[in-house]
Structures are given as C-alpha cells and as structure tokens.
Amino acid sequence: MAEHDSVVFLVDDDPSFRRSCERLLRMAGYRVESFPSAQEFLEQGLPDIPACLVTDLRMHGTNGLALQSELANAGWGIPLIFVTGHGDVATSVRAMKAGAVEFLMKPFQERELLAAVAEALRVDRARRHQGAERVALQERYNALTSRERQVMKHVVAGMLNKQIAVELNIQEKTVKFHRAHIMKKMVAGSLAALVKMAIDLEVHNKI
Image (cartoon, rainbow, N blue to C red; front, top):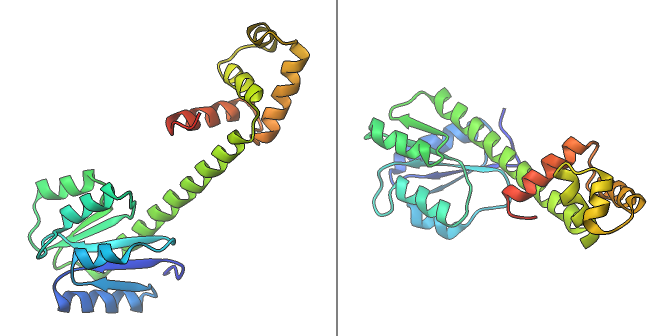
C-alpha cells in the first residue's frame, strides 16, 4: 500500500525509463517527481515529508554515486535506490556502504522496485522519527537548571545521593529534591531510562 504523505523522486536521463517508472509508481499510489538530471533534482530541494530517491548509476553530468555524495555532504539524509544496466559488485558494495537501500540491475521486476521504494520510505520515516525524538530530548535537557544538570551527571554516573551531596557541597535532601525534578522534567520512568537519555545526549554531543 502506498503512503500518500510521501514522495518518490526519480532521476534518470533516459526519458522512456522515467516514463515507465513514473507510471508504475503512480499506479501503486505514490506521488512521483522526476528529473532528467541530478543537477535539476538538487536545485529542487527536498520537502519536509518522508521521501526516497530512485536514480540511475550512470548519467550524463553528475552520476548516481556523485549525486549520493553531494546529498550526504549537504546533509540530505534521503534513502537512495540505484538502478543500472552497467553495475558491478564493487560499485554496488560502494553504494550500499554509503547508505543506499537497494541496488537493482536493469531489467528488474516491477515488484522489486515497489518493494525497494516501500523499504526506503520506511527507513526515512524511522530516521525522521528518531530525529524528532532527539530534538524533544534536547529540549527537555535544556529545561533543566544548571544545578539539576550537575546532579544528573552524577546520578547517571552511579553515585549515591549522599555521595552527590558531598561532591556538590549540598544537603542530601536537596539532592533528592533535584533528582525528583530531573526525573519528572526528563520524563524518565527509571534510572536506566535516564542513563540511556544521557548516553543519547553524549552521542550527539548535546550534553
């Protein structure tokens, strides 16, 4: 089943291939936007909805791998599906290592392309969801006071309340007070959950 709040971009310099792919994807219910060159696609920009890109490996001007590199450098995390009639194992491995979802050899079965598009959109939805969760987590952390951040740092390091009190030169009951507020503000149901949040913040250099 197609997802109507998403878009499939198609970049290929072969007009007949673009038309056939457009027809197949639209019949499956997808919104499709096609371009004859990588440059025209790059000038278009990306909408803020789940998307994927189907592109040929070999094209005039910017080829598929170069396009993949440009997208990565621009911070556009759109999943790619490569289609080609001139692929090889080394090239496909390079493309997949760089994040391609699928590498299809022409001619391919229609169901193969549809399955690859469905997977690529699933990947992009998951990426967007994770990004939104990271933003929300950072906002919760930013809402902590400087003292609460100090206490949280020691809490996730495994220190006891009385140890934290000595370390910060405050009373133990004050540590308990801050700890309760930290758990509430961070929406952490357990110490383990708070530790995971701290790890996620550190991984993304937000703490």
